[in-house]
Length: 284
Image (tube, rainbow, N blue to C red):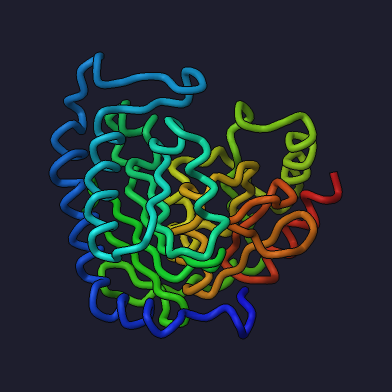
């Protein structure tokens, strides 16, 4: 899903060789210090709404992002951090993704709604990108103690075991996680209706990061998402790519973390499934 010129430059390749384990440690420590002590122990004053009742933020989100911002910035001097909560406070900070400076893309608690309700289906997402190219990613589900990692060109792994997404079993309904209707426009709703057809088993998605992990593990077949916030997709997109999967927008182009994608888009276990899902979305 990446052109020949879109490779990891020598400096960042050396950085990842030396410091990938340090990033993993930072992610684990952020969860241990700021997230898990609050899991199933949140007080009412530690939970706020952002855009509405389905868009929540907690002290765990804010403090874990602060920890990661400080630690990741120190690991790679000159890099910038684009975190979900910092962007909520200052939307202009999202523009750093458009530049050529190495950028850490951080979602401290992906699946905040699940976290608030005491459901273990949440994770911490970190990706490293430069010039719009995803270079490495870390997906950590602390309540399950599962860590998935990917480095461009080097494969995807879950707790040290190689991930291969494979292809759906012939004749079985496609298992597709879709955007919640609350987060879709009328046009996107019409596109998603294309999935309600014979041979497809759509369901509402949970944590985006864990949906991507399910694809990389071959436990799910595809996603159909209608939003493009980089912190939700960057880590998972690379994980799925490196496990052998693919992603496409409605125009048949790969999803771009810099935005301006034709939505909804799909990520899938293999390229044939991605094309099939886009066909269903385009036909409605």
